Each structure stands twice: as C-alpha cells, then as structure tokens.
Length: 106
Image (tube, rainbow, N blue to C red; front, side, top):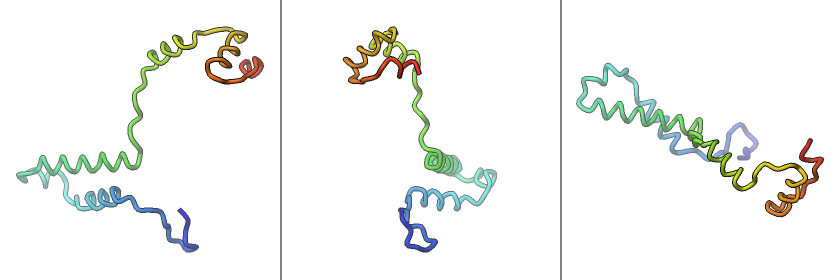
C-alpha cells in the first residue's frame, strides 16, 4: 500500500496474525509449568494450533502433492510424442498455438 509520505505503513492489518501474536505472547511459561494443570492437554493443543497457524501465515500453505506419473500419462494420452513436423500442425489445430519449427528446436 502507499505511504502517507511519512514512515508509517498504511498496509491493511491481518487480524488473524495480530491475534496469533497476542496469543503466543501470553505463553510465558515452559511446558513443565503447564503439566500439572487439569487442562494441560488442551493448553498444549491450543499452543500447537497457534504455532501451526502462524507458520501457515508466514510460509503459506503446503504445496499440493502432484502425481507426476499420472500427469505424464494424461499428457501422453492427449498429445503423444511426435516429430516437429507433426507437432506444429497439431499445436495449431488442438491448442490454437502458432509456432514455427525453429522455435521448438531453440
């Protein structure tokens, strides 16, 4: 976002990130202090959830797993390997791509 000319940043605040920061700042004891508490498991679960949420905000979501063998097979069924002189007309007809043979070799 644009700045107002000063050092202040006018970017919108991410309320989820602010809440996570507040939550994590409240964790001021180590695990052995929480252990005797009745709801220690709940507290530990919440802290783990907060850390994982913060990690997702910082690093983004995990990339989806891709089955490369399946993708390769699907592509080969749609466009089997072919020499350039067959590929250029195939691309023009099926993919609406105009390309010259020289462009493929380079």
